[in-house]
Image: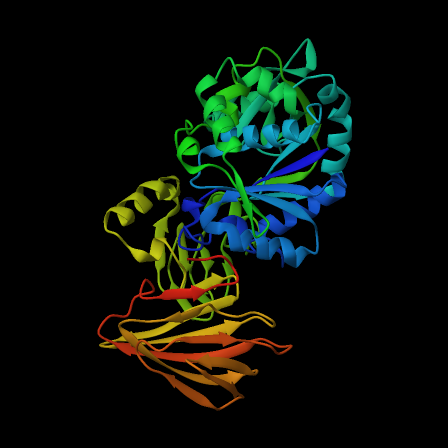
Length: 463
């Protein structure tokens, strides 16, 4: 059984926690590990076959880093741009065909879910295995514990409860209660089927999608442990989910009950369920002091949130953006994000802390002609050999040991030592030590832009 981790989502409804370059699946929203890492652990419990992760080119180093942190094996397929789950699963099926295993079972697992305990998914997968091996499309239905309006529902056939009668997308409260009375499940978004079954059933429904994916797969390249599909053909793929492309039109779908605590962590309503509730209906994370507040979610970090007399609000504080929203309008987050996109707001793209394959940097302060950043370099990692046309840099080592090349010089620095890098000077920063290297960087110049970089050598394949 081949686990297929669908990790290409954008998570825009959870802005400002989730950003374009660091979306929700890479965040630790329910435990110490990220949602992606928890999904990888589930996959490893179900199958000994290393997971196939399918995500976006722009997230390649996050995918690789978080996979490495789990200690698990896996392969990473990169899409140039998200085209939703149908295209991703076709790529997984084509991979199985190419490897000479057309009957390979594919287990599609969204990377942004919470499923506890893991054993419940293991058992449900084993229950569905025979049906999947016989050529059926097997779905997993969560037994509901309340009439949720934010999930899709699967209504089983009353005469054959393992077969799907129909799908219902996000009903209102009354419809949801009626569906539960009739034995409906929440649609977990998990699919188990054979690779050849997926292609055979999807081809007559989505011929353009299949053709585009085949051409993209034929043009794939492999480097640095990444499988990159052909850009031009993949961008012609229709953007459609596997539910709309196939499952809602299939003549037959099998459903297996999943007895688990399951949540799709794609909304503030779902996320706040992960926090303990106070008697007045508030939930809080971070440094929060409140009086006379009711039914309000507070999410913060190091900065103090002090609240007085708030009711039915979302208060989400990050270092560079603050979200204040009436909970009644929480379903309109996408419209708010679209408005911010129209304004060209950089806060949609990156957090102040930006992750790189060598570690991270964090913006601390900007001013006229200067920028201050904190740089953390992982043990054994190195930045590219580079130079800047418009800026000079001054580095102060805060902790760890820095190995620096500057033109023809090689310099070793320890804590409380510093070095200046002149405008246009060739340089590289490396950490050959056993602990993280922390650097305070002060940039100065007329143009302070991350695009002002010329890389002459980079171990991570960046141009």
